[in-house]
Length: 320
Image (tube, rainbow, N blue to C red; front, side):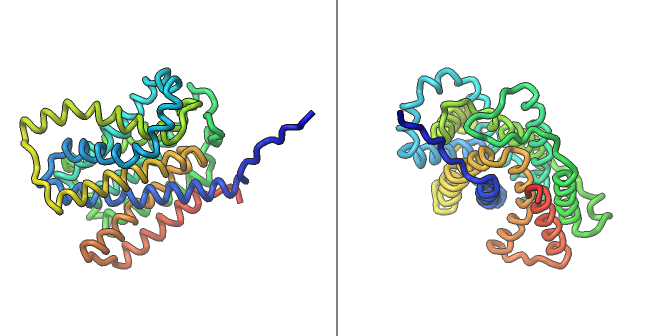
């Protein structure tokens, strides 16, 4: 009688390294969203930016995802409520709120507020874990208490973000007023945290690519009524290189590539640990601003970036 050999699983250290690298890739790509939100705020209405982003994303991922969707359709149909919830949070609301925030606040403020996501991700993940069965597809059991090391890393990274926004001056930080865009960004941060925690409960039998396509399709469908209202009230936008280029970036890279890598990262290392890497977003935005706008970084900015990187390394690492 033949003996079936158990499939090999990747070593925990290798899986963790790959998961953190994927989370970092998504974070770097998503950092461009804040610059684009500011660049398009005067020419493309937020809802229209979000709608065309997901149409472009669907066209980009369809050739690779539709075969898997067809094979898994019976399972997908049974779990449409879960998929609709993930699409509402991660597709319909999250990025639309970012583009709305970009109308009245700076890219730096948006990145700073987004850096609060790891704390909310960890909290939502714990709440979800209390009500859910173990995660499918070999996802890590990340429901244990955060532990002093990870908490210390999160607080260290958060301190770096706060000081970075204040420019090293407590007085400047105290004068930081919350613009309407800051409030929109707070709402976006909460929806992203809920989406990331919900990813851990991805139904068994639905692959990464099928999950991605269905959330994109459902999210775009839910945006369609708001898109029609925006067209009627605000009118369309001119299709030029200045508008088409950013839409292609957010449709292909920020959607098709970044969402796949983020979802895979959570499957490998869990929502809380991947969320710690998200603290690097203000650093990425600062570097992108330097590359695109020529804005230099002084000693305070460099020191704060070092704090953020150290906090991420402390909070996202293993026990060793």
